[in-house]
Image 1 (cartoon, rainbow, N blue to C red):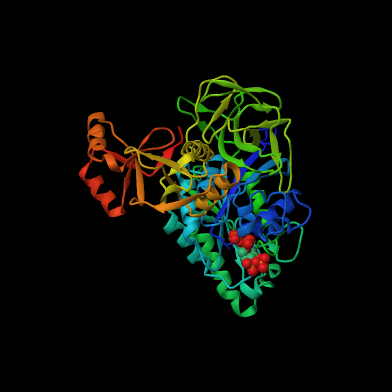
Image 2: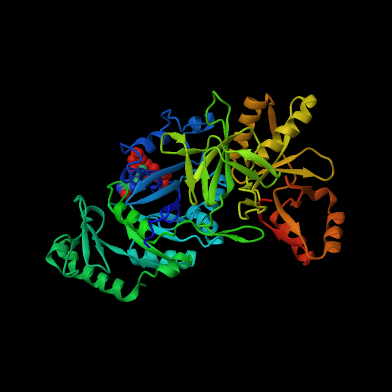
Length: 523
Ligand code: G4P
């Protein structure tokens, strides 16, 4: 049986991770163009350039010209269904990005060939590594001056502790960039020439050497020899386990190397993976529908004030109109209008399979981390909270509205806009975020949707950790000793807040029986 015969085996659900400016938007656009999901290159770009499009859901996104929302783009190519989950590119807004990565089965890592691994790429990679997500690497901007390819591969291996297997190799670079040479198949793909790659006798075939400036030829042949002898061959198992990345060189802007990349995603990237629930592992080909919510987006359509919960289907088939069980509350929920998303549009989904992401309109019933099933009592793990990097106390300008504020903050925290910490000493709630933009989003939404004008005040806390221990007595002792620095999160889990990283470390050393964690699964 081939891997395209069952609906779930045809799915490839992935995200693109990169540092801003490496070329993610350009590559997304070219990938979608390939898949026929958009007619004209430039539509994704348009969004970035602040042209009002339907995917410009929030005012803030428009004002700042950045993508605050995580959208899903579905397209078919070569018998497979690709679900590309877009991750917001801006450095500021990272929690959504992290959570999106819990819903993918693989990722494309885009690296600027002149810059190598940059800070945000590394951070996103670390999130992928938490789940051993297989990574395909695309080294971009080969049409410019680039760093030595060996150097780039070495940097990936050293900084990410990830083995590399170059699939193709650049033929010259910068102004004389001529194309790529496939190291194992002896084929050449020439820049600015469409159609299939051409088979050649070897790197010294005139069809290849003709693309290398004469004075570079000897050095280039040596480079190929070294690459073949010294680099690892591609190994599907190591890739699927997240230990090895196949590397493609190309240029998104010139639409070069993109087809090889998608073909590789189709051939090597895994179909929907099994998902760990609290009590058992759920396989994608199980007949009953299960899924989890990894993102909530409010105000997608300002005229309807709707809330969309993005759910990753983990197993079975979701049919429009089916009744699902929301495990957290035990209540049934009718999936009467699940939606699919495309680059610019959305449409009702009549059916969806494991690997797909559907939007479920609701009025606040669903929250991040929720599991939906056909009746089974299981809860998926792994939609994480990250310890915030910024903490602020909320200052309400109208004290009469304290109760309304509490309700609104609870809702915002359930949507994952911010994290909410209620100090145990009864003082005003503290919100925590990973990126400062989340504070702007909260303020704008509280004012717009709840008529609650607020300000932020700094607190004496700058870091926090979830706390836990196998020794309940020791935990109680710690909590009693640190009363004014203790809070509970949305789920009632205890959180220790410290003024500096130094004082946090000090407490960690003093209390070896207490576990201080900076990542927490939802629920
Ligand atoms: P991002 O989403 O990762 O932030 O990156 P984006 O695609 O917006 O690309 C960042 C810049 O790099 C853009 O230039 C884009 O045109 C350029 N770029 C992307 N891929 C390539 C490539 O393969 N080769 C070259 N030479 N450039 C590339 P910009 O000047 O910031 O924007 P624009 O004026 O071109 O729109």
